Image (cartoon, rainbow over all chains, first blue to last red; front, top):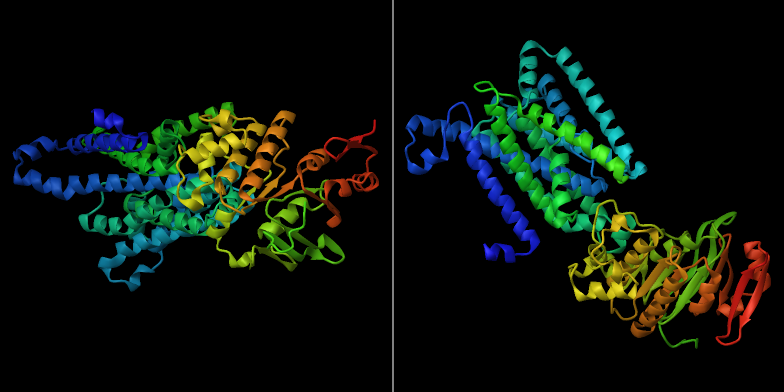
Length: 339
Length: 264
C-alpha cells in the first residue's frame, strides 16, 4: 500500500482504474439470467454445460463490452482534444450515425451480393468504419470555418444526426421484409448478438485504432495551444488530425458495427475523469479507455439484471444516464461561463 | 549599436512583399536582424505589423522576396529544427481546458522532448516572464495579463538557453501594468544579451519601444516609414503624421531617449 501511495499521481490513477475494472469484470460475469460466477470458475465447480455458456456467451459479451466501452470513451476524449471542446462526442457529432447509415446502405443495397455469404458481416464492419471516417472528415472540414466552437459543432452534429436519421428512415421504407428485419435487429444495438469470430475480427480492426489514439496523447496537449502556436512549437498538426480522425473512425466504426449506437459514453467518461485527473491527455486518454470499459461493463450487467429474464438494450440505458448528465454539464458550464 | 557587418545576421528579409502593386498589404522591404538586437515593430492599427511577423515566421508565404534564418532559407528548416531555434508568441491564445500554468509552460518544451511540468527550466522561464507567482493556478481562471505572462514563459521555455535563438513577440505587453512592463522587459533584455538572442517585438507603445529597443521599424499602410535607432525614428513630425495625432516630443537627458506624449 505504501508503494502504491508513493507512485506518481498518473500511474496511481491508472492502477486504481485497473483495479476497478477487475472488480467490474467479476461483477459483470456474475450478472445475467443464469448465475455464473467466477467463484464456480475458480473452484472448478462448473458443469460442462455452464462452462459452454460461459465461454460461448458470457465471455465474448464481457470482452465486447470492454472493447466497445474503451473505444467509444477514448474516441470521445481524443475528439474533444482535437476540437478543443469538451462537448465533442462521436454520438453528438454524428460519427456514430454516419457509421450506422453506412451499414443501413450496406444492408439495403445489394453491395454485399458480390461477397460470399460468410463475408457479409466483415463487409458490414468495414463499411461502418468508412462511414465513420467520412463523417469525421466532413465535420472536420466544415469545422475549420467555425473554428470548432461549441455551438457550431453541436449544430453540425444535429444536422448530421437528423440527416442520417432521415436516410435510415428512407432505407427502412424501401427495404424488403428480410432486410427490414436485419436492420431493426442490428439497429437495436446491444452487446448480446455477437459471435466469437465477429468479436475477434472487430478487435483486430479496433485495436490499431485504440493504439493510434493513445499514441497521440502528448501531441493533443500541444494542440490545445491553438493550431498556430502548436505548429510553432514543432507539432505536425496535420498529421495529428489525420491520426485522430482515422483512429476515431476505426474505433467508432467497429463499435457501431458490433453493438449499434451506444450514446454518451464518449462524452461522460472523459468529462468525469477530467474533473478528477485534470485535462492533460497523457493521463486522460488511457484513463478514459479504462473508464469506458468499466462503465459499459456495469451498464450491460445492469441491463441484463434489471428486467431479467428480459434485457434492456444497453444503448437505451447509457442514454438514460448520459442525457441528464449532458444537461447538467450544460447548466454547470453556463453558470461557470466556460462551456 | 555598432554594425557587425562581418557577422551573419540571424534573420534576413530580402525584398519581401505581400499583395499586389496597386493593393499592397506590405510593400517590398528588406531587413537584417543581428544577434543581441531588439527590434520593435511599431505603427498604427492595420499598418501590417502582424502580417510582417507572419512573413518573417514563414506562416504566410511572401508574394515576392525571401526570408532567411541564419544562412538558410526558412523553407530549408524542418519544423522541429525551427521550433528549437525560434519561438513566437501570438496576440491571443485561448485555452479551453483547465491546464495548470506550469503545464502550459512545459508544452513549450515539446520540440525538445523534456516537457515535464516540474522541471527547473520551466520554473526559471516562469520567473523570467513574471509568472512565478502563478505557479499551480489554473490557466482558465487567470486574468488576461496573467495569461499573457504564462504564454510568454512558454515561449521563453521553448528556446531556453539556446544561443542565437530568435524570439518574436506580438504585443506581449498589451495587458501588463507599468511595473510588469518594466520588469519583464529588463528580464528580456538580460536574456537577449546573455544568449545572443534576437528579439522582434510588435509594440503599440512608442515610449516603451524607445526605452527598450535597439531599433524601431515604423510601419504605416504596409510601407516602411522609418527603420533605425529610436532617436532617429521617433521624429515628431513623422510620428504625428503617421498616427494622425497632435503630439509633443520630450528628450530624456539622462538616457538619451526620445519620448512622445499626446497633446490635450
